[in-house]
Amino acid sequence: YCFDGSGDEVQQNWETMTRVRMEYLPDEGPAGTGVRVAGLMYDGFLIEVEAIAVIAG
Image 1: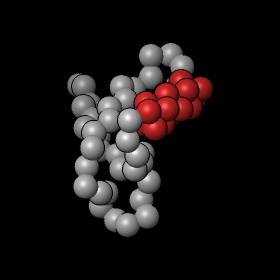
Image 2: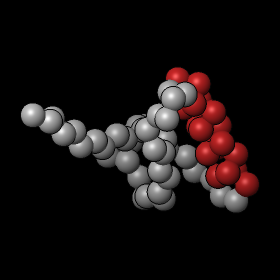
Image 3: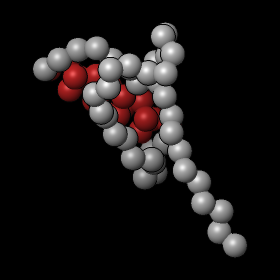
Image 4: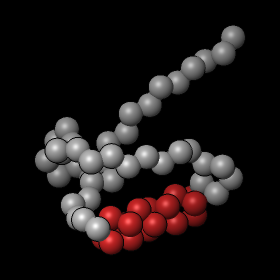
C-alpha cells in the first residue's frame, strides 16, 4: 500500500493494514512486508503485488 508519512503515522498505518488483512485472511495469511520506495510503477497506484508461484508435480 502506498503511504507517505513518518514516525507514528507509519506505525498507525501499518497496524490498520494488519487489522484489515487479518479480517480477510485470518488463518496464517500471507506475510506482510513494508519497504520504503521512491514510488510505484504508475502514478495513482496504491498497491503493487509481486508474486512467485510453484506448481508441485
